[in-house]
Image 1 (cartoon, rainbow, N blue to C red):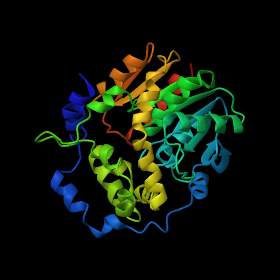
Image 2: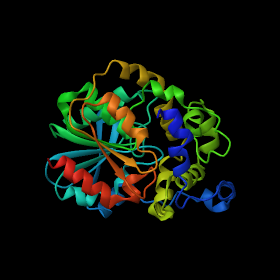
Image 3: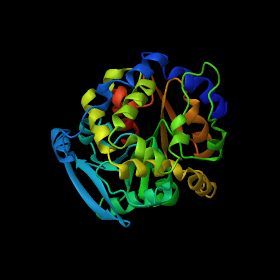
Length: 331
């Protein structure tokens, strides 16, 4: 099954299959005053890091400034998150991973506590950011786990700098390739979910005007669609994410990750199949969405289906994700 068919069937249907609200409920919720919650009182990254026993810091790398959170001892493990979240999406898995690894959770270029430069949001440049951060921290060869946009950056890091990555885990998303152009803008009748934000985030200037200071609306909307257990991302967590994207510059930067997909596809054409060990963790409703590109672009990949989870695997099923990552990176 190709990606277009998946979006029209398995991925689209199942993301709401368990506990997601109806389309009517989504519409009603998006208009409530509580969705416009004030984000001014959210804790700082430093305070959040301390709450986990980690340390928050910044580094100047590749012409930009990256925020990262570090803790634990052992072989280095770099965590790369996705949209519309920050390093905080790994909060549930970082402490147990840190018992065996030096864990470094990174806010990518344009994310959270990192800078929002005018450009550089193609995944090759973002991978270079991570490479230089790894070198700045003196980590040597690292294991990498990426989710969503972070999975794309992780793949690019392994493809462009194979000596830097020992093992790679991709959570629920693959690097953009030609199949990206099979995505449709208009959903089929009765299709409960389609990736409308892939098109919305291509628009210049308007998203900043619509979403600055109102990002909680979008966070709640995506949680309603892509979580099976709505309690997995709490009101506090959602406020933290909304605060991270509250400024026009952060909205613009996050859109940049999507606006560079064309360049990412072009870059990917020149990449060899990844020969290092690669693990894919996929939601149970559409595992082929990840499995098919893994088969095309990775030599002998592994795939584990995470049961009872939507897209946000590390937040819905942290115990499963932790177990699989420790086993994979422990080899």
